[in-house]
Length: 484
Image 1: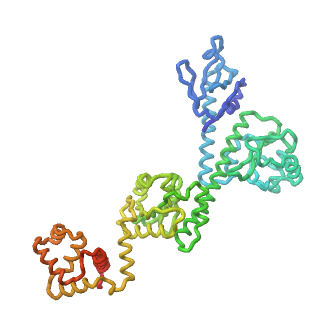
Image 2 (image 1 turned 90 degrees about the vertical axis):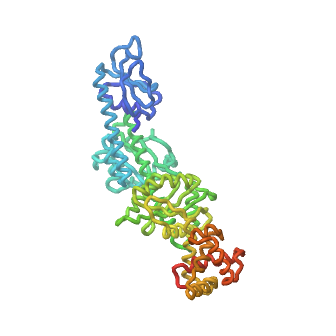
Image 3 (image 1 turned 135 degrees about the vertical axis):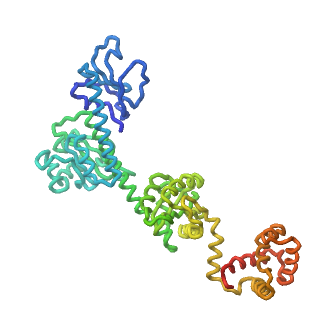
């Protein structure tokens, strides 16, 4: 929470401050007693006496920040210090309350209710159609002016008033910062602030000075208040955007025929680029009897700047941009989250915006099905593609497409109590390395050479042909645990 010098001048008004304020930056978040050997920090308000700064100064208390100065009508340094600390404590508590409200889904009226003491005057908020959204409590009908009454009773400004305002100031919704009118458009002197985010006008706030006067410190408080309302609007827009983006990602990865052009357009608007390398990660929690998917997805969206996390069925789906953060750094940062939440992650292959979201998420799903599912681990898809392909082949292949040598060797082994089937399988897996094959089969080299010579008689195909070897290897893998 950073405050301005004018806010402190307003908080110290009982000491009749004489203000010499030039910068009035919103930088003050700490207070210290002034001393000659202290190094002044830009975020600190210093309290001392005039005699500390000027040789001919008296014992009057002063507050200083950069080039701003408050001369107070008192010599009680301790009393001023306590008052300044009270000001800091008051606004810090307000900041905490407002941020809690904003981040926990509070309504706009909740923010106005929590700020009644800070504003100290009637204020209201209107939407783009001049409809009432919220107002400060404590002011009823007949206690402010006719515009206030109209908002409370009918939820909108009087039509004649709106016509007059629009005719006199047709560009009023484009104004930036706090502004007011010299002409009496409003029944009382009012200070207004427009909420414009991404060139969209979302509404306007008005602070009413019924006595026609307002202290600069009050205006600074109003400025802080408007900043919180702006945060609320920004968060609301982000949440709405995430809801749409979540739905588009879910559809893109779940429906093979889905049109993903709108998802691509939205990602480009968010700063992603056509050539960005992307990857899907599928997060699952094998050990949990209950799901914390929604909480985990929300937390990852807050912490990670290069991904969007959505819940999908019983998993969390992550769409990661590897240009913003590298794959190595993404997995490094993700692993503690997986360990603490008791999840594991299955990774697809790298793809680009123009590619199919559906196909690439299927890659991650395949990895998730075939990996070891150890909590805290990130499994790369390239290590699990072959088991998937073999599984698909097992479910669809015709037995007659397997290499005929398998049936020949099984029949021969059964009849003669030999082991030529396993010998050929290991020989091919070891890339025809005699030593490695003999070691794996626990055979003497000469015994293996004899078997290989006999295999050449039983299997007439040329093992120097790489396509023959590939056919045999695939046949052995597919036939494993089957009755082909």
